Length: 422
Image 1 (tube, rainbow, N blue to C red):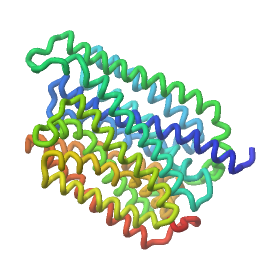
Image 2 (cartoon, rainbow, N blue to C red):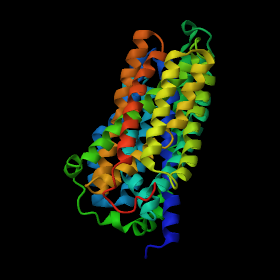
Image 3 (cartoon, one colour):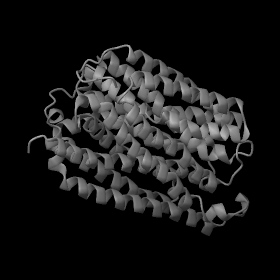
Image 4 (cartoon, rainbow, N blue to C red):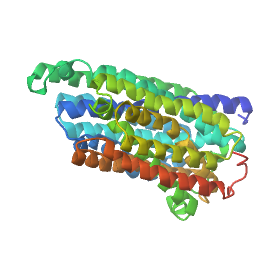
């Protein structure tokens, strides 16, 4: 099948469904943290092990994933990734049945391993499916639908995980075995439903696999997927650092947001309501990505990234220095600033890297391990202060460094043709 504009659009729509799926699953971990913290009586540091287990997969699996994508092709790699994600979801009920927190961490690692393979394949595909000058627009638009998933997930999953069971008890000391079992059962239901939806998506991708392969022939014929080449590219390394910092900052904020809004010196709302309010954090990212996909057609992507990251750093400073509703609103507003960061960092790096897309994408996805590192640091600070607010210094520093990356990229011409004004 020849590569046509209609074929590219259809393939792009298919790929965008994947962005929605992994966004929904990734952010489902946020209310899960609050649930597990209460069920297993965890500290903030211990609770953030869930994110560490999840995002550690990016550090471990990304490099092998780049090789897998190159050898079996992008469509087959996507189907394999979805199958791994289903397997991980089905391990969750086994973990809750044994009431073993460690096994929950294993399940999350498996799920994230599938998402890692998915990201290594889907991000460059979304950027490739169309004219080169529109790569920023396409990846940001796909990420907007990723944000749709991250917006819906906290509301739906919090409504299930943070309701009834132990959360119906007024005092932790009065929690019965039946209430604990009910809360664990709610976790099972959530992940059974997610597994079913992923399985349906896998069947859909299987039916359009040839269209995906035909729509992006340049990626299918890449000659060098070796990560060694990416490690020799200065811009691939800088992009990896920026991704590490961005994901670490975003996840640090999202992971602790439910408990932060629950604090008496912020909003003081019940955990279930706080979990639902986290949808506003991710919803801001969704709105910003739809708006950003239009702005990126008119303005320099590096400058937009630099300004957005500086704005996020300023909001973190407000959270750190203020209290009450002002702190809560500032924290939720960071999502709007986050909106275009990941896709723009990704495409700026692909354009400037001297390595292949598969190798560069593998390195960038490995850098998502920042989501395992910075939340642990944030959790430790929150434990030491017995308050989440001081932990915002971690994303504040990260955003300042990302801002520097954006403005530096704005001054450097892309190594590949087709950057355009974006």
